[in-house]
Length: 383
Length: 147
Image (tube, rainbow over all chains, first blue to last red; front, side):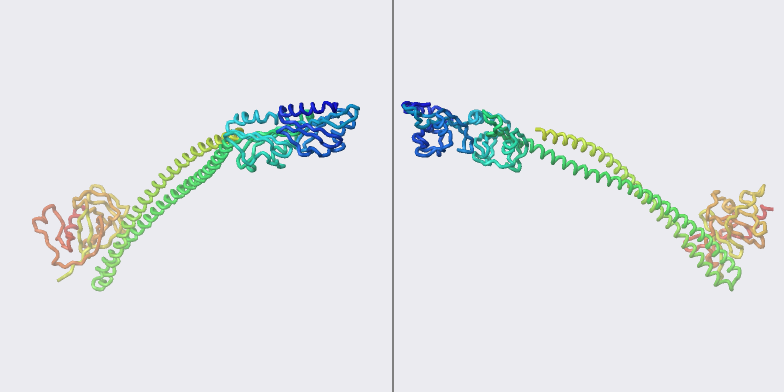
């Protein structure tokens, strides 16, 4: 209780002390339910408490007046937009009547929030790729600190946190959350960690959250590169598989070609047999012609016409006989050419076999590289 | 001017001609020629030609030419030498030619007597020379040696 006579001393003491309190302080004197005096430090001000205003009848000040004793109350953010501790002391006059109340308003600041400006600038620079450290109350960002290397402009002080934000979820679940993402919110990948901050006196009441966002550009880049590498390698693998399949089909085609060539050689031998047969017939015809000519000569004058026919038959037989070496020449040429073709097809068969072997080696190397690429990808995920 | 018809055949590289009226027929060389002992080497043996036994002469040997393998074109030229049949192995029978008597040149007597030969004359046909055989000489020679 404060004696009315000491009130002026209290006021001047309050004005002096008020400037010294970190975080600010406000003092009020009420007479009845009306504010008659007020002092607030530069860093702390509440519009609701102006001189001349009335205080609520069931508020902390009126409680102190009614009960004639000092009353203190924690006021949640929802009332004045800021957490407060209000301590109200009754003022009594000489006749022991309650004159009014002397109230002290102290903004209640979480120790982390209080220290934010001290630790955040230091901490923010301690990450390799820089970081953004922010603190929210239950609805918006209240402090933020960006490093020199890295900043998120879309997260200013006053930014109202959205339902899907990590901070909002931390506040809702009252549990720390650490997750990668951010590409859809910030446009680039980050690791965001958020811790719930509880009331100093009531460990069940969540009052704020502290978040750290660090960029994951290098890891994400690495992951994209290794992903591209994997895609490229699987395309190469597919192309090589196709090559191998084609080599197999070349192989079987060449074998078919070889078989056909053998058949052609066989066929030209058949032609030779036929031409030998033609030669035999020609020989036989020639003999017939000669014998006929001999008979015709023996027949004398009457056989003359027949002799001419016989001579023509012989000439024809000579002509057919002369085709035989020509046919043989042609079939020999065919055989030679076909043999050449066979040699060439054998050499291309050989080449295709070598190609198949080389392809297998390449495939093995690609598999190795693919496996390494998979490891790289896994590593990038854990960075 | 009289024309002579002759059958032209080859022995070795040379062409020979013989009067067509002396030729009986031309056949393939039979496989069943029977060798006869104690005969001159140019007598190849005896052959049964349609139930008639005839001697077979290898003209290549008779003409003192290299003994060559019987080629595919070799034929047996059967001659009728004044009623006697004689088989002659020749390398090829090529044609029946009709030539004028004037194109036959007789050999000089001196040359004809060298080497006891039975060539009657030489006939020029275009750029070929065909040696015409004397049938009587051939017959006497062969049958003398056979008997």
